[in-house]
Amino acid sequence: MIAVVQRVTEARVDVEGETVGRIQVGFLVLLGVGHGDGQEQAEYLARRIQELRVFEDDRGRMNRDLAQVRGSVLAVPQFTLFAGLKSGRRPDFLGAAPPEQASALFEEFVASLRARSVPVETGRFGATMAVHLTNQGPATFLFDTDQLM
Image (cartoon, rainbow, N blue to C red):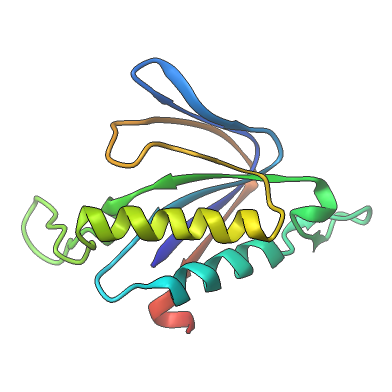
């Protein structure tokens, strides 16, 4: 799994002009599911993101986690994170998991965050989405379970 985690002061995702997910302070998480990913990767990422201490404390240091800032997560499925760009001008998506598997693991990731008492909003799997955010910092972090686990 690949997760792009952006620290935000606000974020929302719209589908066909309708807002389907909105948060204030927290993380916008763009999540890609690849071949070979499973429940272990989903739970690992949920734990790492929940524990990530990148919100500023009183001294301006990245030292607080989501719970300490009463933050939320807006999780957006993003298969294009597995785009193959080694050759040609058009990406291939051979590294992305099939939609049925990816959808189930996206939901597993969301459920794992919620089980950790993290408020979660989501985009809509398979939909064309407009993602709006105010990245605070900017601060953006990349998790790749193939490199971390």
